[in-house]
Image (cartoon, rainbow, N blue to C red; front, side):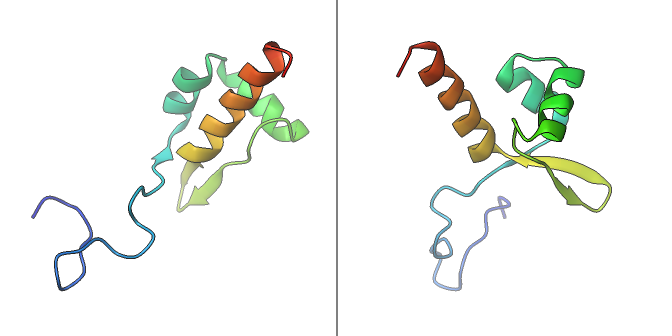
Length: 79
């Protein structure tokens, strides 16, 4: 078994063609190029996506982080 979720016929579950990964803070920091305090301050002010709490873990959906980065790129290019 390779860790992928499969249905009985071997197909991926509906809607799981591109499942959203959950990122821990070090991965988020690497993706956005900001430091810990800058990211967490932006979360508090609502300027960065809020994380999910899964047990004791604090996780961000990768798609939200990518959308935030893409929006910053658009803003910097004046779009």
